[in-house]
Image 1: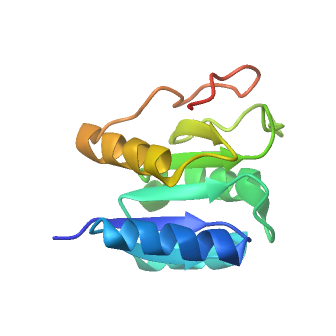
Image 2: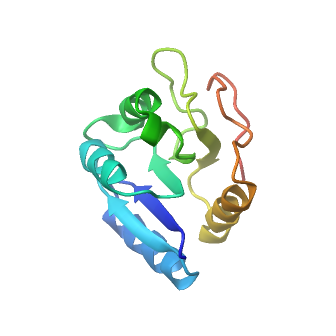
Image 3: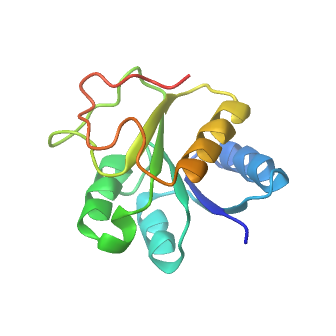
Length: 140
């Protein structure tokens, strides 16, 4: 069985790169360019991981994570949060939920893949679950 990763980022160029890279490494890849589209696709499928850009339009990462926390089916999906900021601003008290890693752009696809494989093999929450974003360590 092939693991499915869902990538939510408004930058279509990055999404194409992510899709090619992860597909080449044996993953099934789903892509969405906005929060509402992502939410709809997550509810229809069962990805083992969500790679989520903090600045995702149409709901934003914070809005999407808030909805995921309230839905038992979605709350179990681990999230790698990507950001171009040193520390994403957390609205209403932090990201919490299943955010297992925060990775700052730019990063190598090999690094992202390594983190995805680590989460897949762990099958359990990682270093950031339930933590406030006031000062999370960024994965490099």
